[in-house]
Length: 305
Image (tube, rainbow, N blue to C red):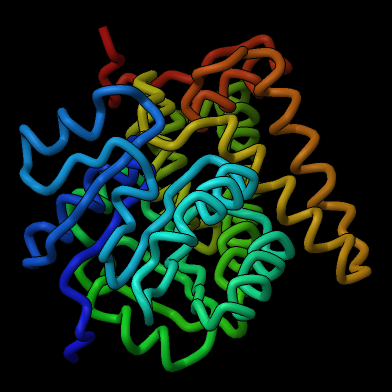
């Protein structure tokens, strides 16, 4: 599908944004990048090509689409304010951050008064799938702008699911991470119980993956990052807590009782408080280990030196 978009501004080339911008370059788009970290955009351009912009507004000038991949909706609002005077007629803002759906809706409605379209398209899959262009992308917004940006999203994602109106993608992303976070904690607790009983945690993971207890954590996290003690999946513990907070916010705004969601968020927040900043989200297993006064290990899984 032809989008008519050839130039893209990518605002926020952090751990996720960096490989996503590379995928756009490899797909043939002209990409102008900007990041709040001084020198990062220039470093990207030297290593991979593209245009290093000294500001978000400079990156957005003449772009058919502007992608934001930023920490919170507050930064997104600041960037949108800065780039609005430089947006080309018909430009579309693609909000790919894990933001607050209600905040995104407010920004989109304000932009609509100037006939500027905005869609949200948060992602799941981590750095590894960003590098291979196989991210799961959840979108929200009107069909016409989503059709136009579809080729850009397909350069970065392996699956693209339209979830509803603007903000629906971000609501779905937060709720996806809520389910993932709960699955991770209960999987770790099960391994701790089994280990004390005398079961090999690696054997437990094998059985879970062949049984009804299988989930993303048993498949992709327990052996790879917990039993190996690597704790380097590429997704931060602080970001998980943020997403869980967003999921609970959606629950409050919709008047939905969510006691298990609240408990899950509190446990992850406690893990973040105990472990301190800069931790990978899989390190939350160490919080469960601290409660049990035990450390998970298996003779089948080599530990990180």
